[in-house]
Length: 440
Ligand SMILES: *Cc1c(COP(=O)(O)O)cnc(C)c1O
Image (cartoon, rainbow, N blue to C red; front, side, top):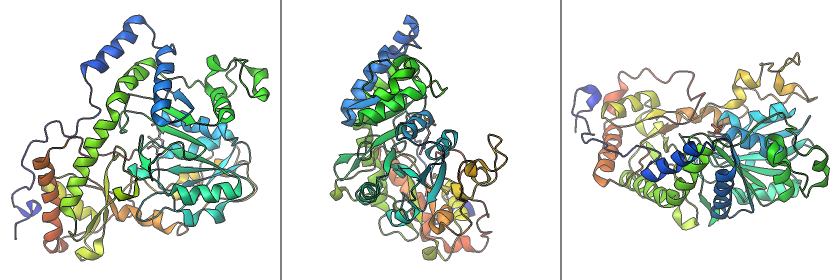
């Protein structure tokens, strides 16, 4: 048995990772596109952005695409486009980034959290329908860490109950669910294109939909210069040209210029990522203590750009070894491992006690006559998932020798877990990330 590096042995990862983790991939073509906008002084125009939107819509297979300054703004506008307003509720998984849920608060609405499925890490359709009330306007679905959510089951419930579905595609741009591109299976897709995401253009967001009325309403929130009197939705016409929402959400053209170049290569780069990630997991198939978070390709689904790749941790198979100690041992091998995913939002003080706008009560309860707060223990999977999932190397290149070394780091720790039990101090009470999902 090899000695673990944490206990004085040699490291499993010896090779340099070269450009394995560099992302996004920037070439002279990106640089030239950005320089062209800079030299022309067209940073605040919309000519490049409109071309980007057109190409994006075509690639997405959507009728409409609308660029935003970031993903948060695109989600805000998607909610507004769905008619979310004062007194309304949205349903959102508890395990996600803040922006999947919080923009509803500034619309005067509130959020009810649903649990996630312990394997997919996406909204659990079995924990959805009983949360729908007459106030529910929209369900936000997150294709978490690239895994496409169970859209068939979710759409069936949403259609039956007359509730809109917003897909937060920030982790899964270009991904497939049973052969269909995520983002336009629901009523509207909204996504971040910021630098940490798999579709990375600096700061930016995109909204996609096939629903003209939804698109036009979403546009009025923060795109005053495109809010023209010729909109088809008559009710919107009286305030044309005005920033009705009080927001300004236009995409920066240094980002849209880069986006046009990135789009050309995005699918093939994602394919290389998936090849690399699948090679890593194929190599670890059957190793006790860890499981891949990935789809069966025979289903016609895929993991898109495998955003912030994570794995499942099964401590029962490793004598109850804490995830914290496990991750420490993998890192000592030169590997990449960090415990947890996002924090469960339903337990956070921001959603339970914080009075953001001065209503004299928690903002989550500002416009509702029922207490929608969810106590500890109410979403058991979300509350435990940070002890059972971990960030791992998110390979961008197919370099089999380097991938094998990283797989070896995991294999070595899983096979020698007994050596780690004696000095295991356990996991801390607080696990998970309050900020971004990305590490590494
Ligand atoms: C990153 C992210 C967002 C927010 O996008 P920004 O571009 O950072 O505003 C929204 N939802 C999810 C799931 C994200 O990961």
